[in-house]
Structures are given as structure tokens and as C-alpha cells.
Image (cartoon, rainbow, N blue to C red):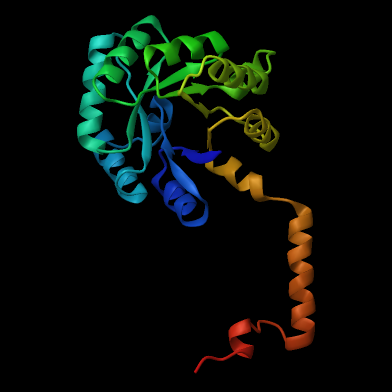
Length: 229
């Protein structure tokens, strides 16, 4: 399962790219608005951090299919290869997804909360569908089960559309969609850190370092003990 970063915070993106095996970034209108920056320069900086060709999913905001397509074209002109237009699974959105797929885009159907929405979006030509895991949980549903059902639907009907799972609040949800067969998960920066955190790992590392320091002295490294030529 590929990991993407769900943010428009350029400092968080730069840190995550440096530390984690991040395949790209997803944004949405809320994340973009939160940065309070002009759109063009913000997108340019995100693209520069990611590098040319890395996945960057950015959402259209128009209410009608024709303008959605025009927005996607404008975004592609700015972001280049690796750009995926995010389009909501409304009736106008599905129309836009069809047109974008026909024009050579690889659109992402977003705001998916049911398996049937995912199936319809896939049939319309979506390259990705983005089911919202925690939003389903928040209304008493089972977001991981929705993802598992979408995986089964796509396998049963031999659909090439991939799952870009989104809206997570816990590491357990991320593990659940990974076990269900999701292709991609996009995570907030703080949740990405949570996936690694465990007190037993911390205790193990501290024990190793204490034993090493007891034998060789504090702050002594392998380089100190094995000097180069």
C-alpha cells in the first residue's frame, strides 16, 4: 500500500518527504484554504518539494462539469505530470470524470462513502476512488468494511480503478484498510508519525544505547571506534 500525505502545509510535506517513503500528496479545498496563501505559488512550492512526476491530487471546486474540466486543465498546466484532478461523486462530478478520462486525465473520485458510489465512479473512468473511512465511522458505519467491499467489487468486476483511502483518525483504521487490500492511503502528518510510535520500540532503542554507552562511553559512535583511512 502506497502512502500519501494529506496536507497543503509545505513544511510538513518537506519533513515527511525527508523521513518517510511518501509517494505523493493529496489536498482538498479545506487544506488549501487553511494555508491562507495564493493558490498558484502554494501549488508551485508543493510540486517543487515533491519533484516532477510525483503524485499530486488537487481538487476542483466548480459546481458544474464543464467548469470542473476547465479547472482540471488549468491545474494540469500548472502541476504537470503526476497531477490527478479530484472530483466529487456528484452527478456533475461523474460527468466531469467521464470527460476527463476521455481527455487522458487520471481523475480521482473523492467524497466516496459507499461501495456503489465507488463502483459508479469506476465505471465513469476514475483512476482512483477516495473512500472516507473515519467519516463513515463517525455516522455509525464501518469505514474499513466499506473499503473491503469496494476492493471485492473491483476484483469481482475486474475494474482497474485503485483505492485511495482517506479520512483517518487512528493507526488501527490504516491497518484495517491495508489488510482489506487498499492500494493507497493518504494520511495527515501527525497520524503518519503515530504509525511509527510505540513505547516498546522506544524502550528497546534506549536499552541498546545504554548498553553501548556502558561499554564504550556516552556519545561514542561506530565512526569513533572504526575510524576511516
